[in-house]
Image 1 (cartoon, rainbow, N blue to C red):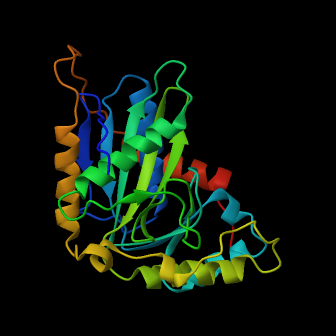
Image 2: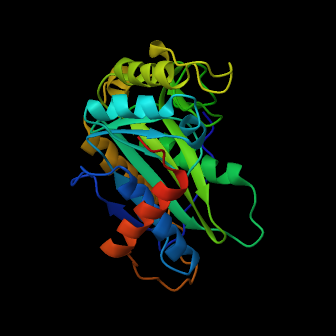
Amino acid sequence: MEQMSWSLPEDTLIWDRTQHPDEGDVLYPFALEELLCRLVGEGGAPMVHLWRHPRAFVMGLRDSRLPYARKAKRWLEDQGYSVAVRNSGGAAVPLDLGVVNVSLILPKSSGQIDFHHDFETMFRLMRDALHSVTPDVAKGEIMGSYCPGDYDLSIDGRKFCGIAQRRQARAFVVQAFVVVSGSGKAKAGLAQEFYRIAAEGAEAGSYPTVYEDRMASLKELVGLNDAQRFIDAVKQTVKSHKLTDTGAEGRTLRIPDETQIIEMIASMKSRYGIEG
């Protein structure tokens, strides 16, 4: 595979929260990133944010409009899942400790409208982080996967990573979920059952058709069974692709306080959430 050059701003910071997974409302990391994106747009340091959640199910906006989305949400919550609707693109994604979420939070250049470049940067980050275990990471939609898109990442035709984006006026967030360990089939089965309940009576094509054999974990694909090894590889890859000698003045880390995050969660629920 062609190895094209790419880079991140030299003052990009890494915030690894994977050692303390978010056990409460799964909207917490999304609210945090919404606020971090604002701060980056105001001149704060660019960031790579890594996080995990032990048991969650995150819908896309289109999923939340399905005829029986509320019923499916209750079904998931009865099984102990934290369920939420995210404000970035894409469709439903199940999360557990085997899924590592990686987000690039970067400033937007004046007049920058080509979002494909941002997806491409995330693809190259994932590809290079995994190069020591496999050279065969491909991009392109995997039909039958959950949260399908042009920047699905796969190995041998089975998807292990999906990418979505949230854009603001002066900054953006590119979010990737990476299925490192566990059963891809089981996660796909959960998404499949969600759509069976939520999409009853919906028009064909208004939601993804999920097949269990289209998803797999990196453990199943290439024998990578250590989430920490993947996390360390991502961090090392970020460090090795920072621009150097640009003369840019380093920026400090700015973090929202807990009150701001709680308020943002409430705002996101009010705007995007579904009751029941």
